[in-house]
Length: 165
Image 1 (cartoon, rainbow, N blue to C red):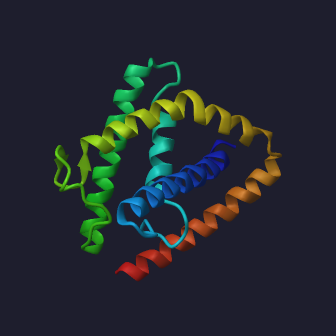
Image 2: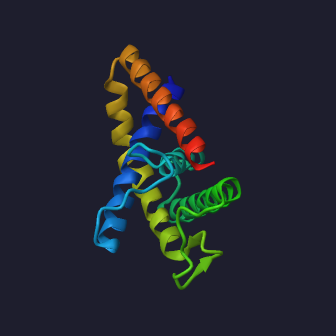
């Protein structure tokens, strides 16, 4: 059942990441900005980052270590994702070159610090509540929802790759 729950969590955290980036980037641009590589309203890098933190970092870890490791895990994921997208498609979906402390425009200290804070909030407060809510959904409904989300996101991924080749 963990795999089924993970698909639901992947979507939820990807959707929240898309909302966050859409709001921040739209405010910065002064107009509505559509964020992400995919067509749908989700950014899987946030979902995978959240799942990595949930899988790799123990909830009994103290907040300082959780912050540090969340920051490192998500920064590595962001750098690798940026590099892979650029190598495959020849363009960048984000660029931190204008930030004071950054690495090749792929990651920056400000975003890394934010991801560290979000990692602590995720493990200590957000995910336990979402897990509790997810566990209350009958298993057959969870499997059905996870299957729909998997098919929808996979289809979106295929069409997005084809569009960007």
